[in-house]
Length: 79
Image (cartoon, helix red, strand yellow):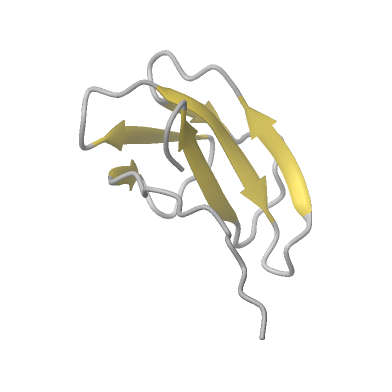
């Protein structure tokens, strides 16, 4: 038997609004930790784009077609 030694990733608690959004998203973390990037994926897992750095927590989504997307939010130590 073999085991996987995959590193555990500590999750970030955050809020995203408005939902649904048309032109921009505001991402607010539950801590003072600066967000490093936001990656956007299609529901089938295809990577769409990445936004960085996020100084004010605003992500401009004007260039995305209307639809459902998944976000990966990351800081320097967590995602």
